[in-house]
Every structure is written in C-alpha cells, then in structure tokens.
Image 1 (cartoon, one colour):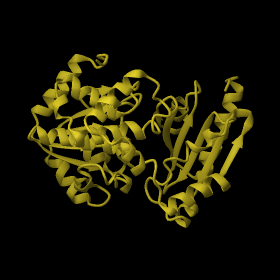
Image 2 (cartoon, helix red, strand yellow; image 1 turned 180 degrees about the vertical axis):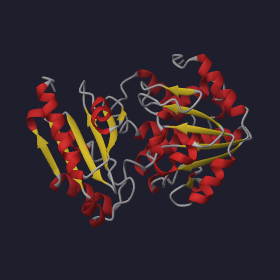
Image 3 (cartoon, one colour; image 1 turned 30 degrees about the vertical axis):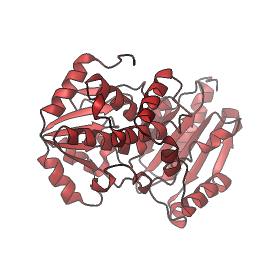
Image 4 (spheres, helix red, strand yellow; image 1 turned 60 degrees about the vertical axis):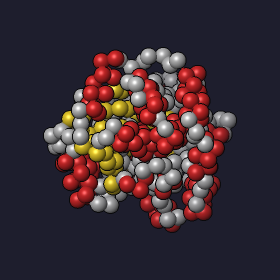
Length: 343
C-alpha cells in the first residue's frame, strides 16, 4: 500500500477534468525525454480507455530512442507539422500539461497553448510551478512525472486500466529520469511501484537496452569526444564542466537525445561531486547539472540559469552567447567560495 501523498481535492479535480472532457491534448516540454514521452503516452492511453479523443502534441520531435513506446507513431510534433498541432490544440476542450512547470518550457508552442480557451491541468514534479493550470498536481518529491501519474491513477481508481502498454510508458519515464535508479531514487515505495509494473508484464531489461543501454555510432563518438577533449575539472570545487558548441554538434551529426548522458559521466570520477554540461543551441545554451549527496544543483539552475529540477539532477538555459554561460559558471564557483559553501 502506497502512502497517500496527493491531496484528495486535487485527485477529485483531476478525475473530473478527464471524465468531463471529450477532446484532449496531452503535451510536455520541448526536447522530450523519457519521462515526458512516457507520461504523455501513458495518459493518452488512459484517455483512450475512457472513450475520449486524445492526442499527444509535443513542441518538437520525440527522440527515436522512444519509438518503442506504444502510441509513439501518432505523436503530433509542432516543429514538424505546426498546422496540425495548432488545429489539434485549438479543437481541444482540455489540455493536460505533463512534466513541465511553466509556459516557457513549450518554446515556440508557448503562445498557442497560452491562448487556448479550454481548461488546463498540470501534473509535474519540478519546483515552483507557474499558476497556468487548474488543477495543479505538483509534487517535487517524486522521482518523475511518471511516478506521480502512477500514484494518481491508482488513487482515483484507474488501476485496472494500467495494462502492459501503460505500464511500459510509466516504467520508461521512471527509469530514465533516475538514470536507471542511480539517483533521486532512494525510497522504498518507488520499488513497490516498479514491482507492480513488472507484475503487469513490463520487461525492464528490454526497456533499459532500448533507452540508456544503446547508442548510435555517431552518439558514441560524440560522447567520447566530449569527455576526452571538452571536459575540464575544477578540483578545488569538486566540479566538472563539459562543453559542446555548434561546430562540435555538426561534426558528429548531433541528434536530439545524443547528449542525455553527458552530465552524468564525470560523476564516475571519485573527486567530482557535481557536473555541469553546456550544449550550444541557436540563440541559447542548454544547461544540465548532476550531483551526488547533499550538494543540490536545482537551486543553482534556478538562480543562475532560469531552470530547476531535482536536488541531484537539474537543468536550465542561458539566453545569450556560449561565452556568457561559461562566465556564469565561473561566477558560481566564485560565489560558492565567497559563501564558504562546503562541497
């Protein structure tokens, strides 16, 4: 039996929102990861079982690593087909916002969702959600939005709807958002959920192989190059910084998802407690941070890079040139020293 963490009033509002809708859009943040894709597709499958018309609409393409997920082929990508995405969103009477806490995370799809007149609900596990939906089911203590969604579905009486397809989507999000349960995953109830999903038929070994356990040749070469040539260590702060600029990405034919593991890799070095990864994009720099123990990187991402996340796994963005992001990193090091922060 799981602890009842979610407020009953919010559960009632969530269930009523689903059951009183007819045409639903489920959406997530740009650059969807396993938790975003998994939670979106899981909820879409539940809505199908409720007899609703449901469509997953994402700001950009979901990585091909996730192509094994049930429903992947029916995802509408705003980046690929903006007209279809707009038509679908405008026809919805409910928009379910999963795995993001603010409209800025929708990138070019932001205004389209913001201007939609229909009801909106949020299910998310990131800190400081914006008041853009009602209800907002925000629980940062969860490992993933997929874990939160599982708990919601069970609490509102939808447990029997969690078939193998739904369970596969939920497990994928939980597993990928914890690095195969290697961080932000040290609580017993998580494994009660995992056990239940396996009982429902989930092949966890296959999912690992298809996501974290596989790589294209180009991705492998890009990651090896990044660690060998672009990683710097800062021993006095027990930190690492790895940078890939646009030239690097072009050289190795970068595809979405190719750098998902790069922020984690330096933590294998015993003297590194926190790791920062910068990926240069058009007009901004994508920031990913990982850490171990009691050194929390979500506060750093929130303060310096307009982001957030988990205590040990967070991200953000720097809107400006790569040089500015690097300068900000060095400012963080100076601030840690001036504030006598022990790492």
